[in-house]
Image (cartoon, rainbow, N blue to C red; front, side, top):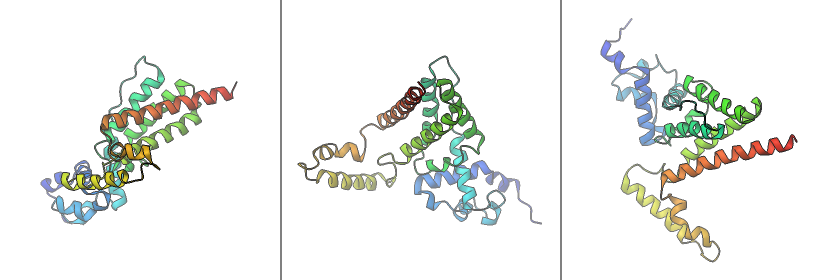
Length: 229
């Protein structure tokens, strides 16, 4: 039986492999992530990687786990439940923001990976502390996390070509298409063409998205409590 050298084994550390796969996804998208490509970058045969990943789906799952592992959950405080919840959800988004092309891989790993489970439990703790039933907390928490993943994956301009010149050319074409719409028929869209294509402030984009999610959660809770009266 062939043996693997210590140097090769070090290159084949699962966490390092997942990190390399994530770099590929960030630069070229998920379609570019393959066992063969990863093996080439680590100067081994594809068969060597099958010791860690059975197939591409297994590799993509590892990327999802890698993203969730970057979540830095805030410590509990004496703040209101909704303020603490916002901090938890912000930690989730902060981990995903640098990786819009791979962020949706976390969706099916939240209830599998240790980091995802920790975030889900903390989210439900805060939702139930606010007044949701356990079942409602599960549904509200799930939909909120899905919304935030979508917020990241659909960040305007984030999935454009990473080459600055090519990216700006693509955005310019999209802006021109909206600006060319008949202003009498679409006055507001024409006026906001720049913002619709690429927000002037990415931080504001995410802050507003977070505000909408948390405000929506508070609104759902208020409606549920009103129904019980």
